[in-house]
Length: 469
Ligand code: PLP
Image (cartoon, rainbow, N blue to C red; front, side, top):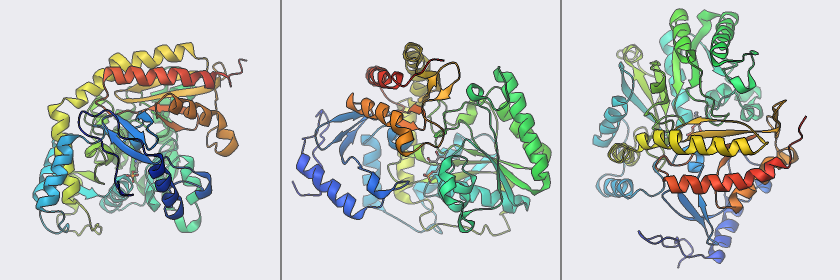
């Protein structure tokens, strides 16, 4: 085997051949030359991945992991789906790339398919390379369309890593980017609904919805309604906690946007393309935003792709006026061919319906049952293939197992829980005090039960930190 070859994963073969020496070589080359995201470079030890298939991946030592994170919540149809791999290969053989100023068959087909799942009146797609630039361009469209500068977002949010997107981000990843040179100054934050840790002293979903809307309206009034171009909202907040909006909240946001002439931008980068058991998460609440940002699940991340779905009214602004933005790889044929194939596979295999079924019948009941037995689990919430366990030191006070924004030694309890999950062959997503379970949408029932059994064992580690009041 050459030092760049992967161990073979043949259809029907269960496991790739272990090759620890090769794994060590990959690790050393990575550490010598690769600069990693969101990290102090000397404090990380990235696991070299040898191969992946379906809901599983392997390291070079022969260990396999159930991918309960879908990598970074993007392999919605699992790894190496043969139809999507074949579509990429076919497109590569036919036409790898063309510049965005030309028309391209796969780009047009992808846009048509994507808009076919959007609410009525959203008929155009501006393609980007990922989620942050989708948000960046959606905000630019809203600012030009309204002639207003400011954008409001929730504190509990992540919107990406370009200047505007990171300024909009509510979570602590924004803090390191706040120097004057790196801040889009026309951004302001508000608290969205989160009943378990209500900012509004609410005790019911209805109260939370009503009070969160009143707080948002006050924020609009104090920021100056005529200065606000857009509100950007993750339909279901992803990284910052799998927070499902209570009844009436999104309709209320839509109504506030209409009242004050504000553009409603739905960030569906993580929640879109089946993650919640609907094609778009907004379909749960029948609300039509003006712009929808998407990425990740649109082609399961096989080739980088994102975009903005645009309402007819905003599209009209740019019929005669130039949209002052563009990207060399906007609508890249390989990425769009992967999107077309992914969406077709999701339809044929009823993957979105499966995600809804899995949430209702397997993950939801299973995680709640496990949560009830572990004193470290404060709340289990989610839908579809999008779940979070909110871990606590104390169920009464709801004190978080590790504090918000915790890193280094303060994060040790969560690191121990994650290490225990991995020891039992499951790789979930963690963020501060939360274990997040976001597997491929086509995870089988047996795989889901296997993953939950690993989490059950790992929670015994979290329980050790519990201090009942
Ligand atoms: N918006 C949301 C809700 C996300 O979860 C992410 C990434 O995790 C982004 C935007 C940014 O996407 P990308 O990393 O593709 O730029």
